Length: 374
Image 1 (spheres, helix red, strand yellow):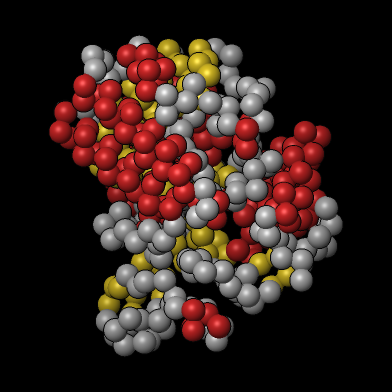
Image 2: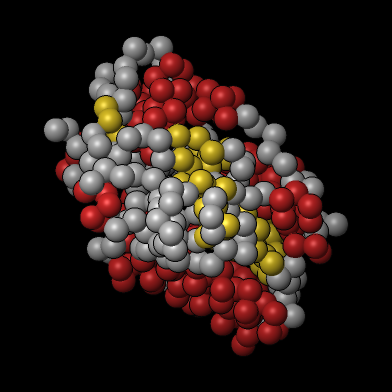
C-alpha cells in the first residue's frame, strides 16, 4: 500500500536515503527541510530525489509544519541539530530544533485534524552515555563516565564501580539505563521519550530508532561536527596524520547509511515495531585507530595516526549495539560490510566538490579547536 509520507530533514544525509527508498516502493514523498547553512549552505543538494515534493520549512515554524503534517499519513522525523561538542555552547539552538521541533509535531498530533498513521523518530546511541560492560566478579554493570583523575593517569579502560576490576565491554541493549552527558544526547533522548509517550496516549504507532555511528556518501563534509570518519578523511587527504585521543583503542559501532535507511522502512512496514525503541547498528565494534588506518589504506597513503594520549571530558570509551531486538522483531541485518562502506565513502569524497568541502571543514575544525596540531 502506498502512503503519503513526510520526511523532515529529508534533504539531509540519512533523510535523503530514506526518501530514495520510499520512492522506490511507490510512496508519495514530501521533503520538509530548512536547508540549514551549516550543512547545506542554504542550497538544495543536487542528490535530492526530484520525484519527491520539496518544501523549504523549519519544524520550529508551527504553522508551516502543521500544513505539511496535515497532508501526510506517515512521518519520518529526521530533522535535528547534530553534534555533541557544538551542543554544549549552542544550547538554545539544540533545544529549539530537537525538542521544540518535535513538540510541534506532537502538538499537531494531539490537537489538530490529521491522518497520521505512524511516526518514526531518529534517536541516538549518545543517549546511552557509556556502553554496557561485564565484570568478572560483579556481572553486567553500567558504569558512569570515567573520572578525570583516572584519565589523567592514562588508565583508559573502565573500572567496575563496585570492585574496581577492569571491565570488559559488551553489546549495549535497548534496556540499558540512559545516561546522557551532553545537551545533544539529552535532546535526542527527549525526542524519543516524548514521541513514544504521545504516540501511546493518542493511539498513533510510534517507533524510535537509535542510530549508532552512521557513515556514507552525502555525509556533510563541510560540517565540522559531522563525525570522526570525515575528520580523518580531511586530514589524510591533505597529507596529515589523523589525530587520535587516548590510546586509539576506544571503540564505536559504524553502520552504513544504506542499512539505516532499510531499517527505517522495515520499522514503518512492521507492526512489531510499534511503540518501541530499537538499536540501529552493526553490532561490530571498530577501534578509532582502526578507522584511521583503514581510511589511510583506502587512499593509498602511508600515513599513521598520531596517538596523543590526551583526553576530552565526557568522551565515552566503548559503545556498540546489541542488535538482537531489531533482528528478532524486524528481521533486520546489515548488508553493507565495513570495508565496502568505507570504500564507497572514500570514493564519493574523491569528487571535486567533496574534496573542497573537506578542506573547508578542516580549516573550520582548526579554528574551533577540534583538531590538535601539537
